[in-house]
Image (cartoon, rainbow, N blue to C red; front, side):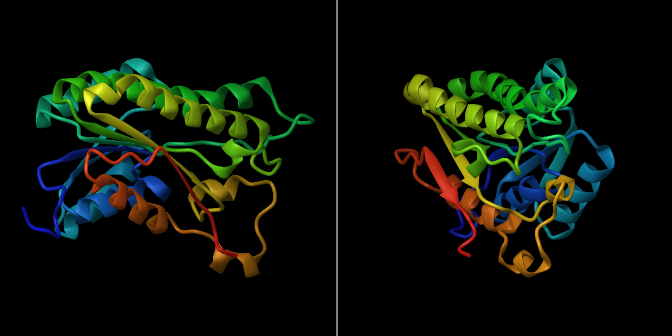
Amino acid sequence: MATDRPLAGKVAVITGGGSGIGLGAAQALAQIGAHVVLMGRTKETLEEASTAIKSDGYSASYRQADVSDRPAVAAAVASIIEDHGRIDILVNSAGWNTRERNWHDITDEAWDLVIAVNLDGIFNLIKAVLPIMRRQQDGLIINIASLAGIRAVPIAGLHYSASKAGVISLTQSVNEEEWMNGIRATVISPGETLTPLMKRRPIQPPPERIPHILRPEDIGQVIATLATLPPRALVEELVIRPRW
């Protein structure tokens, strides 16, 4: 195996893979040899992203599925296993937020939507991939949480913070219960990152702060490093934030 392609022969599934941190992760993993399967709701976005990765000389495909739709997730994962025979890495990056974020304006619908995507979605994917990873006696699950999951931040929203705190707990539960099956889980809690989701903020960051905000490729580089660690090494929680 070439040292510059340590993930050759591996299959990585990335939710939210058409843009933002998911796309950054897909590009980074593809560059070191993995076949990346992008998963998300919008076919056009997924098709464009996978085509761009392949045009760079790497291996990619996609599955259209809403992560909050449990039957759709199960069907998508089953089709990936049918095509490739394995899933070695799962990156749960799909996420959502609403403009209504605080106790004075949040609606029931906003709460339900964010929890369904950010927390239920991760549960759905983990539940779907665990059987194949158990059979392989190997697997890496990387969940994208947020600094807002460590401490509630009003600008992020109470539903967003609650969902991301749940992601941290889900990650810990995987490590507590599945370590004997060779499965590892890492939760990454990024600070401010320049993704399409930032456009949904009620108040945008000032222009002078933009150059100092993290980029999706920064998180992608971290994910690539985690994916190339030896199976004996577990990084359970990782925080990355802008230096400034």
